[in-house]
Length: 257
Image (cartoon, rainbow, N blue to C red; front, side, top):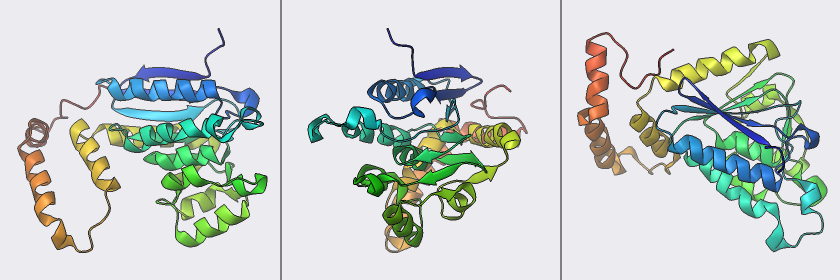
């Protein structure tokens, strides 16, 4: 049996999913895709998990699809056919997902970064939509990347395939922050701690809210949004949060530190 390429660990309400296939730069091979999807399912089904961190071993976060497996395969047998499920799992996860990059991402790797809620990388990390340079199209990842990037940057970087650094990735909306290597752990921990303070159901509903198309005018959605808001104010979770605030204590969903 082949060694696992994705490790899963839960500590203090945080599930850490680690890509561990450094020999091929954590490329999205069939085994890695399968294990990553299984790990995401496990984290999302575990009530004890409040936040998910997606990270990696080795110098590269993820190089994209495994081109060795893609070579010679027909359209129906390409591994990219399984990739939308992983992006959907990340994008729609009811638990917030944080991407932690100690190195570069390319192509499908960037698609995963874009599908997470928070993304942090070291200053030295680089990025590139390299698809056009090998004669393919960044089609699947466009569905998670384009909502993050400003339009001018998207046209430039998708069409040229040029490499860009972490500073620019922050400027165009791909990353939340870029830090030095010795600050990466603490920066991710800061986000994880902040996310874990939110009510689990409230976080899931807020994620859903953020993914919905915006109405043409606020008036079109006030009734629905008021119903959602009032329902959460009156909910068991909302009442616990309000009571905890009044009693100057942490709500019962906050993990023990």
